[in-house]
Length: 157
Image (cartoon, rainbow, N blue to C red; front, side):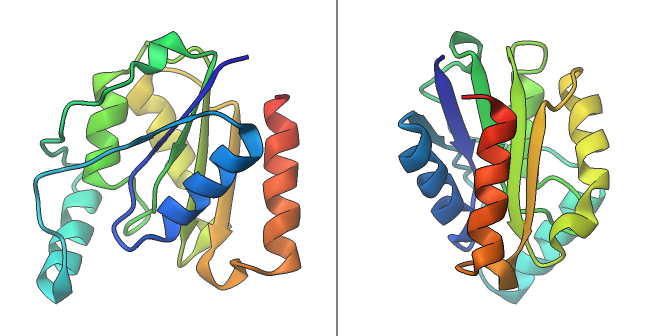
């Protein structure tokens, strides 16, 4: 079964998760890149506001088409309880084209952000088959490894 991991990461935490999942699944990976600079305090505040308003942004054209894969695992942070604008743009642009979709995230609130799944499903017009919502403080802990394994098992790959 072919799998693609598409990820966006502002600080590198979700990039680390995406690369770990790629290593475990032995699959292809695509970094979602944008043209907006989100560094610093102003970038942080602007990002939270845009996420809350469910804004999309301009992203660099992806090299891979998720419609060519059996499963796409989308990895991104959650900002202010919402999908970040770059990932919102990516998933919106490919809505209706994902064979199966899974979502994984490392964020400050972790599984407290489960409402983001309904937002994602309405954005892509389909159900999210599996999800992994981790807290930043869980990174590297036994809980972290266990939750990743449970997520991978739920994908059935």
